[in-house]
Length: 310
Image 1 (cartoon, helix red, strand yellow):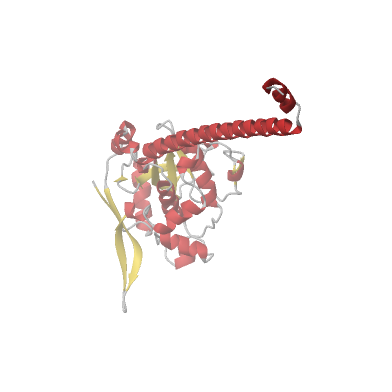
Image 2: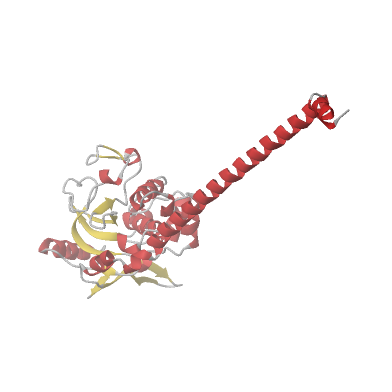
């Protein structure tokens, strides 16, 4: 039998069919392996791109703000001042002393407990498409454990300002706190989550109804518009200005601006006394009403120990 006859016989044999089937199967497996490697490469490239984008956002949040011309503008729009307040009571064996504390020290973004809170809530701003979306989400999360009570009801004195770690402890114990305590905590959480400090301020003054208040103001992504994030609004409270609960608010555009005259019930500041963030504080009485209401509050006793030095 010649080799051609042998080859014809081989092609017709079951062994040849098995060999061909095995070869085809190997080719399919090789193709599948190639396609899986190609897909893995694409996924890796996409992951690298996503990480690079996240690194860029983190850099913009943590580093880019330092050289931002808008920071220079807002830092110098109002006169800086050294503002101290005899905010807490220090007790010795036989006496009580009111401690004078620079107000900007009440914002404590380096507190590990706040870092843990931000991490546990996955509230870091680089997790969101924009800063304003992250700020709104964090603000809502911050409201979930909100309970309000005046310092007079809690401590028996008109004013007792708390540091964030103290506020968190009272929250843990189910004890309500006052407006300034929630302001200090919210500002600290926002900065810890990545918000450039120049974009958040604790503002103190009188609201449209004439009462004193401490609340939070956030500089929106256009770096022009300041939004009011009220320190004493519970998540389920209906703000007539918005016509819905805070929990139902979907975008930062629905939040009131700081000069919104309709933000009466929302406790927006009308007459400013001073404002501060973690690195500076500012004071400018824009009109006689601001100065007079401040002096009035001082005479009442609540703010009589505040010292402002230009």
